[in-house]
Amino acid sequence: KQEVTQIPAALSVPEGENLVLNCSFTDSAIYNLQWFRQDPGKGLTSLLLIQSSQREQTSGRLNASLDKSSGRSTLYIAASQPGDSATYLCAALNDYKLSFGAGTTVTVRA
Amino acid sequence: NAGVTQTPKFRVLKTGQSMTLLCAQDMNHEYMYWYRQDPGMGLRLIHYSVGEGTTAKGEVPDGYNVSRLKKQNFLLGLESAAPSQTSVYFCASSYSLGEPTGYEQYFGPGTRLTVT
Image (cartoon, rainbow over all chains, first blue to last red; front, side, top):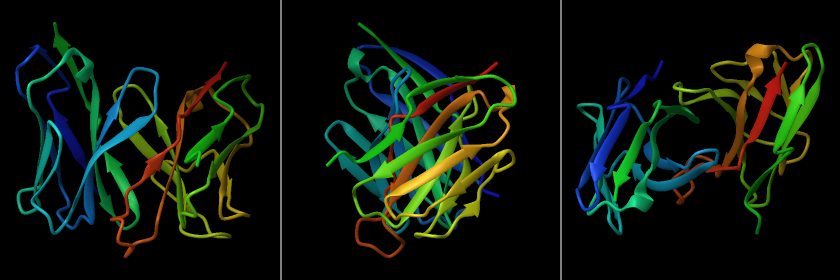
């Protein structure tokens, strides 16, 4: 059974600082890994998807890396802004099913 | 193109009542999923479907039933609601494995259910 862990559970940084969010998973036989953003009381917005054959994906200020052998993925957000405040979820795909971490709640202080 | 929609957005039930949540997608996706999200626990898979007329159990299926009579719709039923089923329910859909899109899952806005 895939177990996905995100540490820390919460993070508070001043505006402009780079964010580093960590995700670890126990079963390395994943098809892909997806990062989501969730605002309070809202649904999930997909940020980045990394295929199992890829090492990283980039979109604007966001960069996600994947190391299957060590069971880790990292989401980097450059030059954080107050609008980046949200909960970030990672999810690993095995056999049609996504397994989610509990998320990291980020607060960016102006 | 509405993507994934869910009906209703909010609902309050009394213990023992029944209800059906409707998920609809207009992207011609083969796969559809129902998840629940509880505080501090991330999302957990309830049931999923890999095609019209097929369903399968996920991680937490007890107390729920599903049906996929049409490709675009996936229904989640609670036959006798319990307070433990108070949660936020999300539906998602995706193309099948092997498609060039990389099997990304697209999520609906959620249904907030309270069982008293």
